[in-house]
Image (cartoon, rainbow, N blue to C red):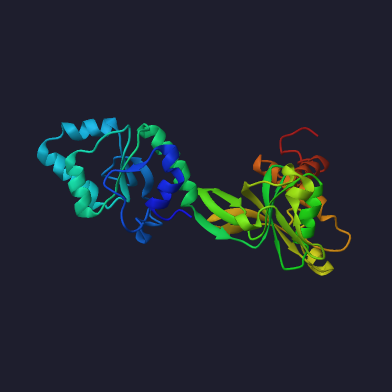
Length: 322
């Protein structure tokens, strides 16, 4: 879990050559304060006093700018920089901070970090790492599986057949990501990524069979570590009257809010004799066509409208010949 600068250095320090410049704080230094957790503050970026970053990076260009300032302007800039209470100030390219940085850092209790990597390389690595590590997360009950390259979450009441359906899909060449408690993180404005808790990875519980190790049974190609959530299929045991009430043109397509992102959702009736694995594959193929801009229901309606127009041509106008 990434919740402090100390854990950040433990996980990325050796690879990114990060080190403490003014000593490691005795207590954990939070990466983002609770009041800023949902703010628009950028996680990391080059020195910016107008829109401060959580981690302010100073490279050679920023150092030259600071050195060119007069004494008063330099001190005012540092005062503004530290007043925003960044989680840390990071010096790239092996730069040594001006002595004034150490004085301000001690006054504001701000850690200073250093790295021999260039500022652009450092920002790119840490932005990717922090975006994933600090993303909003939510755990949903269901089976998360990759079908035809799309991440599909199977949900429904207990004992409705989610695990049995997932097992059927796995035998048809699709891949398990997580059973029971997949974890989802919003890694981009419209992107939700699903993963599996470490303790549950590779396992699938099937009633009557117990816990199955899908990797051991079907091989490496039957499991996947993570996938973008593209579609939710809600398995519901509907009676004939409820099934008859479904829209026969558009089906039961709706949307489910997951971490602020609307995920397409299909309610799939569960009834004896229905081959759910084939239906899930068909639902995924249908959703792929929707993403590409094609909707079979709309196409069918347009085709019927054209047929009606051809069968019943417009009457001749007032001045037309008989």
